[in-house]
Image (cartoon, rainbow, N blue to C red; front, side, top):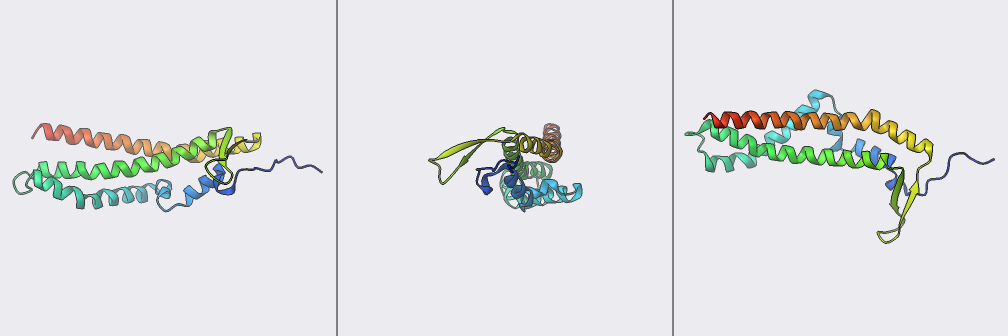
Length: 165
């Protein structure tokens, strides 16, 4: 009796579904999948921690006693850079997994960089992967895009406040 499911030659750690599960269980990449308040608290933690680097730099440019609002805006913007880099890393990781799952043909390495092969997914596996992208990964990427949009609003707001000072 012949099985209708073909054996996937891609090594376990290079199979897109396993890469997705590994990313989903990762301490860092799991942040985006948390409930809204936990997600925001993680981002605020990164932003707050970044103040330890950005505040001294801003203090050199704008003495807090003399230019308090300039100092706060400059330090906030500096801390925002670290937050944007964190969000960018999250977005790139999830985007990579989305592209791996949406590819019909998977490139993989058998034993090293010099012997790459390709494998075409079966229709069942391709359909499963597309469903995972639609119902699991797209909402994550949309949350990250909304977060970027909100950060842009904060930057624009900070720029407007800066111009009126």
